[in-house]
Each structure stands twice: as C-alpha cells, then as structure tokens.
Amino acid sequence: MDKFVIKGRQRLEGSLRVDGSKNAALPIIVGALLVEKGETVIRNVPPLRDIFSIIKVIEHLGAKVNYDEKAQVMTIDAQNVSENTAPYELMRQMRASFLVLGPLLARLGEARVSLPGGCSLGARPVDFHIKAFGDMGAEIEEKAGYVIARSKQLTGGYLYFDRPSHTGTENILYGAVFAKNKTYITNAACDPEIVDVANYLNQAGAKISGAGTPSIVVEPVNRLKAIEYTVSGDRLVAGTYMFAAAMTGGELKITGVDPRALTMVTHKLLEMGCQIKAGKSSLTVIAPQGKNRLKGVDVTTFPFPGFPTDLQACLMSVASISMGTSHIRETVFMDRFVHAMELRRLGADISVAGGEALIHGVKDLVGAVVMAPDIRAGAGLVLACLAARGQSEVLRVYHVDRGYDKLDEKLASVGADIKRMKA
Image (cartoon, rainbow, N blue to C red; front, side):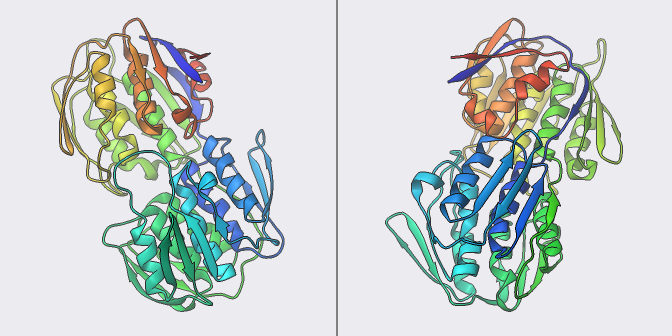
C-alpha cells in the first residue's frame, strides 16, 4: 500500500494537461455494450483503477477489450456479449458499474446486476434507476443483493427524477435508445459528462436531444454502429489543479478542458482573490501574491451547473488558510465532511454540524499524517499538505489513484515536493 510524503510550502508554477474524464469514460465504455457489430474505439481514456475495474466487468459479460494505457486508447468488441449477470465481486469496487443494467436490459432482455459498491458517501440509492426502468415496463425484483430486471422491449414514455441523477440519467439513456416509442426524461442531470455520453450515442446512431438541459428526449433506433470517439477533459481534475494553484500561491495553466465546465469554480476562486484567464480549452489560475491572502467564501454544493460536490474537499482545504470565515453547505451527498477531521490534524479550524461546515482561516497549516477516506477527499488533503509547514504523509492513496493518474508525478512536475512511497 502506497502513501504520499509531502514537504509543503513549495509554490506551483507551470502547465498541466488534463486527461480524459473518468466520469465520462466509464459510461461511454459501458455504452459500447449496445453495439452488436464492429469495434468501438474510445480515445483519451485515463489509465485509472476504476477504468481497469469496468474493463473486468464488461469482459465478464462477453466483450473483448484492448486498452493501450500509454496511448490512452481503448477498443471494444461487444458482438459476443451474452452474459446477463454482473456479480458482486466485480461490482463492489465502484458504483458506476451499476450502469451495465441499462445496456444488458436493452440488448438481452434481462439483467442481473449486483447492488454496487464504491466510496462511502452516505446514501446514494439506485432507486432512481430502478423506478425509471419499472416505468418503462421492466419487471424488477431485488433478491440476495441483486437487481433482476426483465423486459422483451422497454417502452418509452414520460419519466422523471425527484432530483437530478448523473448515473440514473445515463442508465435510462441506454434503455431508451432501443425502446418502443419516444422517451421523455424530466429533471435529468445536466452535467458535461451527460453531454459527452449523449454525443457518443448520437454519433453511433442514437437520436437524443436536450442533453445538458433538464429535459431530454430520446427517439428510438434499431441499432447503433461502431465509431471512434474522444472523451472530453476531466473537469474535476482540472478543478483540483485550479485549487492547487490557489493553495500554494502559485500560477498554473491547465489545458485540455472546456472552461465552461468550471464556471462556478472560476467564480468562487475569483471571489477568493485569484486571477483567472480562460482560453478555448485552457484555464490559467494566478493566486494572490505578496502580503495579499485568499479571502473566505460561502459555497453551496449543487448538481451542475452548481458548485460540484466532488471539489468541495479541495475548496475546504483552500478555505482553511484563507482570511476570515468560509461557510460550506453540502446538499448532494450526506456524510461528505469526513475530511474535516483530517484537516484539523493539520491545524485547520473547522466545525461541522449536519450538512454545513464553518471554516475559520488560519495563517499556517502544520505537517501531519492524514488518511484519505475517498477519492476527492484524498485530493483535498494532498492540497492541504502542499501548503503545510514541514513534512506530511497522506495514507491510503489508492483512493486518490481511482480518480487521478500519477497525481504525485504531475504535481512534482510543477514544483511540488511530493513522493510516492510504500506505507
């Protein structure tokens, strides 16, 4: 098991390129299961633990996968997909694996999918998926930890989510592609990754309109064709780098990402006193210099286009050394302040009550040993250690590796004193 050893107080300066979005690549890989003939080629696929986990899942279902990690290109031949059961031993590592329900049901007429695992972030029910497939005519039962869904052909209609669901929207898109009659989805998730998935499906022959808005319409088609598709840049990795620049008083140019996907993050960093320059596919963040300090900020996490919950931990780290008091309200996931206790080990002044946190900025954080509880909290702790006096250690970095490829090497390339070592 690895750990990061970090000597803080190093200013980050330079340029970092963002890899493809994990949260777009995963559903696009799963969506390739809908293609019965030919080889789907997906480019800009990041070499992350979750990517290798989903490869195991779809290979178990009968797909042939070839992944060139260096080139970040994946080829998928789903012609011989015939297995309709996704077992717990493969599903337990991440919740995104539940996305295979839609393609299996649409293509094979039956799916037995284990209830998923992944990060412990409080209640993240798949009830939205199950209810929507039931509304499309599927017979669904839960038995021994599995969701079993059957339908000769799903029927379209008017579906809604009580609140926007990222994976729920994607799963229903898969089911609706071959459904009988049009499907209308109300209160759909608007995330850029949803747009990426819809663009992939449309290029493969689907007829989806409205992706990126709360109202999506899917006209059914008979089949999808094999295509080549390039995954968009990872806005969450880009956002992490943006906060890293702010945290260290640095200046970073971040390339390979659409600035429009980070509008709310940009606004908050501007409020905190940073300068930001946006290009067509880049963002440059310049932190306050000299005696100027970052300023506290109020943030409420919310589904896109709101402030992303996945960057809340990074924001909390930056707020911990900003002047004044910051207030964070978490509305997306329960129990997503577990990193606050670890930040307090570094000297942060944070109090948490329910879904809200108050952060009183301190002048300095001090090095300590901390533990990453999940992907994004781990990234936030890395940023805090970059700004802390002395040496810190971040344990359980396998969580961080699920969402960030070689984060230590990339941060080191722009000036961080960070090394990966055996714990």
